[in-house]
Structure formats: structure tokens, C-alpha cells
Image (cartoon, rainbow, N blue to C red; front, side, top):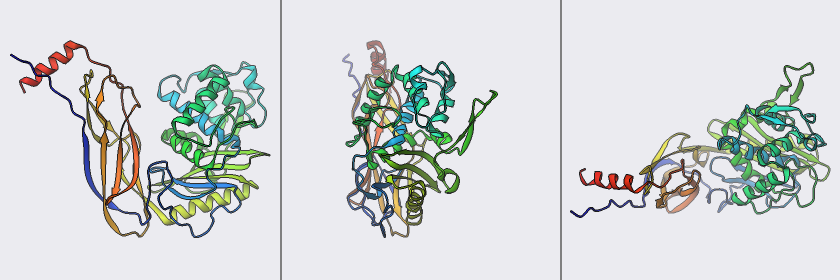
Length: 396
């Protein structure tokens, strides 16, 4: 008897869905739109650069000099927090882990939580210190916890920036203190902020207005969020402020109302009052003009892809975050379809490896594209497993 091995084929899953369609044209995820939605006026007239982005699709609603490379000050900590959250996801650290403060970390000036050399705090407490108080000392302590040294952590930051396609970003430290060859742009900050927001638990930190550190000590340390919008703007829950004499007043902020979350970045503002007012204006414009319609909610089943010669014969794909398209309020209803294009998979496959993309169309026009990553690691199966799998298929 000739045993025929079952062949696994690449698949392209296509589904049609009817949604409300935006009046403006949009482009690929994270890229500039084909035709940016027109704003009635300059939403951030005092900023050196600015951008307004839909957090779900990456659609740019408004921008001004958004690719100019400028000093980002403490907005640098968005990337620091992103690497912390990814380290938590990967199991390299836990929120309960204790983080020791080195002499170097304790020596940081500027905004700080006044860590003493040798003092220990949990990762959870350090995150609060970074997100609320913009602690330069806490940032360095976490960098050393994750990478051993701040320099090694900065290498990780620059590598991650390259992976995200950030063309106008280079880091020289993990906290944003003035340094040569340390810069970013409003566009790049929006992209890294969007990536950070995929870790939904981050807003439990960035959205707090106040909290305490050293609660059980004789001198508890009161934290007040440097981003006052989380208290005074309805729906605001992050992300990070920044200031140096060179950078002026900077802010990457996010707010959510109903099903729409937006990211607003301003750099080089003259003072905090103007900075907050212009970001609020950007938010107001977004919520007045736009809405989001969800294609997949976080946790929804998206499809199944075979894995050739894997210990698991297939991977079930589940939405890791919301997949939505930005809609102009009052726009006409048109057909929108989406297509899940998956690459042929052959073991071994590593978790978070790119395996395809979700493309959203309006007619023949691409509205946006979302990257799809592997939800799990799949090792290569042994020959006996493959033999039994093939034999089993003959009797189906």
C-alpha cells in the first residue's frame, strides 16, 4: 500500500461584512492616509509639530510637521514603558518582582521618585513612578532590571523603534534627559504610543491621577500625574508628558469615548496651558467628526491556519486587540469587505512572528491593513507524530 502524506496548503480566508463607510480615503496601517481628513483649521497652531491618530486603525486625522526630528524629553518613556509591558507579556519579569536601585539609577536628576541607592520597589510600583511622576530614576532602575545596564536597554529601545518602522527616532537614554543624538517625531511617538496602548492594562497606570508609593512607610510619597488631562478631560487616560528647556512642553495623550480611541501628540508647545488646550481641541475635533466601527473585537475568533509539520496541526487565530475602521460621522453606508491573507506556515513557528495581514477594503480601494502575528509558538513535530497524523487521514 502506498501511503500518501496529507498536504497542507496555504490559505486565504475571505469574509464580507457590511459597515458604515468613511467619506475620506485611508491608507495602510501606520502610514499616512491617501487623503487625510480635512480639518477646519490648524488644530495645534502653537506646536512645533503635532499629529492626531485613530488608535485602532492608525489612520491619521490631522498632522503638522509630524516627521520633524525633535527632542522628545520624557515622552521617551513611552518606549521604556512599552519594553516593560512586553517583558511582562514574555514572562521575563512579573509585577511583583523586586527591583533594586543602583547608585547610578539613584543619581538621576530632573523628575524623580527619589529612590535611594539599594532601595527596592516592585515592578508595579516602578511603573507607577514612571507613568505618574515621570521618574527618571525609576526608568533607569527598570532598564537595569530588564537589560542589565541602561546602555543595553537603550539598544533594545532602538531595535524596537526599527521594528516599528520609526524613521525619525533615535534614543540615547531611557528617560529623555537632554543628550546628543536623542530625538523623535510626533508621527513616531504616535506609532509607539499606539503600540503601547495594545497593552490595555497600561492605562491603569497612565490613567491614574494620583496614588502613593511607600504606603507602609513613615513617609509615604504622594504621586500626582503630570498629565492633568486625565482629570479634566472626559475619556482621557494617558499617556506621557515631557519638558526640557530644549524640547519645550510636549505631550502624547490618548482619550476614548464610546468606541473611538484617539492619540494626540504635540511637541514644542510654549507652556502647559497651551499644550493642554490644543490637545483638548484635537480630541474635541475627533469625537465631533468621527466614529469607529469594529470588524473584530479583542478575543474574537478570526480563523484557522494549518501549520505544516507542526506539533499542532493548525493555529486558531484570535484578535489580540480591536480591529476597526475610522468612519466619518454622517457618511453614507457603503459595502466594506475584509480579507484575511495568511502565509503558508511550516514549523517551527515562533510566537509574534508575522504570518499575514487583515486587509479592509471599500470597493476596490484599500482602507487599511493590520498585521497578523502568530498567537503561539509551534515546534516541529517528530516523524512518528507526522506518520500517525498521515495514517489517521487515510481512514477519515
